[in-house]
Length: 496
Image (tube, rainbow, N blue to C red):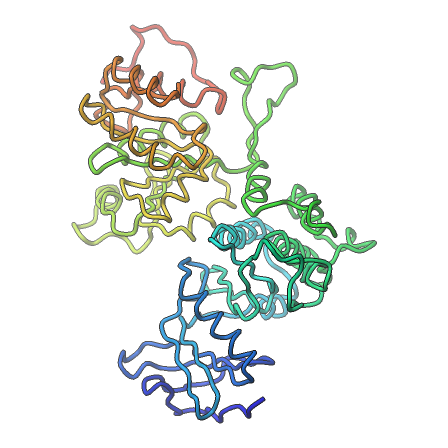
């Protein structure tokens, strides 16, 4: 192994990056904060690795892997270069302000607020699901407190891909056994090849570590006595299943764990013997409704607003999230609600209208955080954009709603979207056609072989209740929420 270079304050690497200070070091590398000489004020993290050819191969593999990835919870690689005279290789990536999860735990006496545990798990699962569904799948293999950065906004970022690998189906076991004792799955020590389930084991170890104040990361006798009593109890069986010795006994995918955590939102009648439609429901978590427009102007935002206020009148605790950073609709609405001048929206991205919490220009990371909160429903306004991030949120939603024009000559746009995504399960999808005729609905149901196609009536004010719209939404959400309205005669309808 060659001697490490003597980088210090003021050293310049790559003819562009001036070293400011050391951020950390490990067996194979060191990480520095550096300022960009071409972009004044911009800071980067520079990872320097100096070692033999085998380690250099790992670093190049890490660079190639990270360059191919794009996720808000992964560092973004902006430069990669080698320095042959010293044998050093450099990765330049986003500098993430914050501290490691391990440092946070030590600084706060091993305590993370109980209401943040589930949001944390969902954040980690979101990035694992992204990695594991790549082709080929990317297995992280070193999920532990020192490899998770916690930002001042309590967002979690996964760092250090030094031992990640692409899954190879033809191998029986890994060539190299790597991982951190206490957090690595048993198969990482020679029992087999690591796959997605290995990362899920590490997630279980991480959750147990958080739930026991940093005392345990393995399920051993007596560990139950150290689990904090105020934590959500449904987490315990999830952690136990994640920590099973044999991969086939664990959850089989990150998506499956997400589903299990969200299943805590399943509702049960408060009294036995009362039908689902008549009972008042006791929700334990959050359901996600995603509204996706087939094309611009199809009415996705209008429908999302109407759905949100409908749900708020039935169940309360509803958030409406604008999941596209360049949208302007919610900003204009906030100006009206708060009485501010045009173009001078409040610094707060949250505002309220008739009990619905609006979140404007929201990131996917924010959605993950909201999932662990007190909302019974989160409605995602995805607009008409069909980029990968919004499509993924649409496909994983509990109630995906497609909104398309009801005009006879535009109905085929919806059929085209369904065909383009035919590799994905569509049994949960609901199709909404504003102002469509009954004939258009009938034809689309037949073409899609799908009965959840609804014509939406004219509804000029989506914030207000409309009996015809409510009838359609009652049908769309049948069995999901109770109908708590008192029956009224037509002549008692509120005058507009």
